[in-house]
Length: 367
Image 1 (cartoon, rainbow, N blue to C red):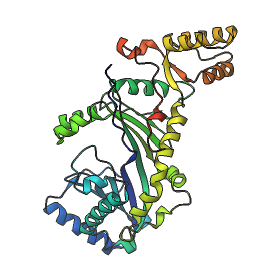
Image 2: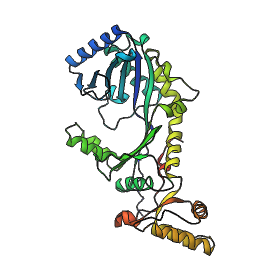
Image 3: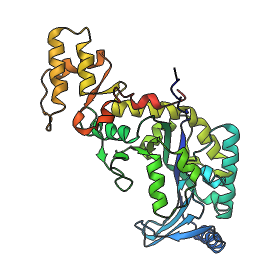
Image 4: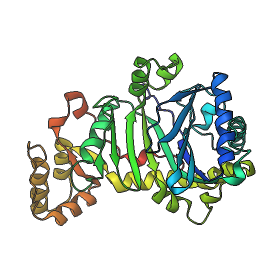
C-alpha cells in the first residue's frame, strides 16, 4: 500500500511590519532627504506616488523590495513623520524569494536585523534617531501551510463562513484583484484577517511584470497563507507587559528584542484569532453533516431537529430566524461539527468529496 505523501510543515513568522517616526527637527528631515536622494541616484531606491494627506509628502521604494520610506510634513501641527512600511527583513538581508519571512531564530534574527540597521544607516535614519520617536504601527504575523487539494476550497469555505452566522466577521474586503476564488480578507478595527493562494498571487505579480523566480512558483503550488495584520490597538495587547514599542531605538537593537520577546506569542495569537473567527471544529458539507448526525447517539427528536437545520443550509435563501438555536448549537458542539455547514450549492463535485475539512486553527504550528 502506498503511503500518502506528507506535506511540509512551516513555522509561523512575521511577514512585514510598519513603524512610524515622529519628529520636529527641520535639520533631521534634510539629513534623511539628502540620504534618500543619494540612494535614488545609486539606483537603490525609486520614487513612487505619495497617497497621504500631507501637501508635502514623498514616498520611495527599495528597488529589491522589502522597504518603502515615506516622509510627510504637517506644518499646522508642527510635526513631521517618517514611515517605514512593507518592511520584510529577509528581503533587506538579500533573500530574493517572494516567499521569504522573518527568521525568528536568534542567529537568523541577528543577521537580518544587522542588514536592516545597515539600510537605516544609508538612509540617514540612525544619524537622526535621537530626535525621532519610533512606534510599531502594524505587524503582519503569518502561517503558511500546504494543502493536498486546490487551495480555492479553503478560500471558498472561509469566504462563506465569514459571511454567515455565527462567524459574520468584520467588513469583507476580498482581494478580488488577485482572483475572486483565490483570496479573502475581513477588515476589523483592531486587525485584519487575510487568507490567500500564494501561488496565484505570484502568478498575478508575474503578469504585472514583477520578477518571480521559477523556484518560487514551484514552491508556492498548493501553498496557502493565513495572515493576521495587527493594527495599533491590538498591538498594545500583543505587546502587553513584555515591552514598550514607543521606546524603540534601532541602534540599541530594539527590533531584535521586540521580535525575540513576541515570537513565542505569534502561534498563540494566530490560533486564537482562527478560533474566534471560524471555530475549532471541522467543517462539514450538508451530506457529511447529515451522515454524522444519523450515526450519532443523539436522541431521535434532536436528530430530527439538527437534520432539518442542516438540510436548510442548502436552500438558496437561508432562514433568518432559527428555532431552538441553542439546542442545535449544543448538539453540533457535542458532535464536534462546525456551526457553519457548507452548502453543496457553492461546491463543485470534486470539492464535495473533500469533507470533513480540518479547521483553520489546526494549521497553526509551534503551539
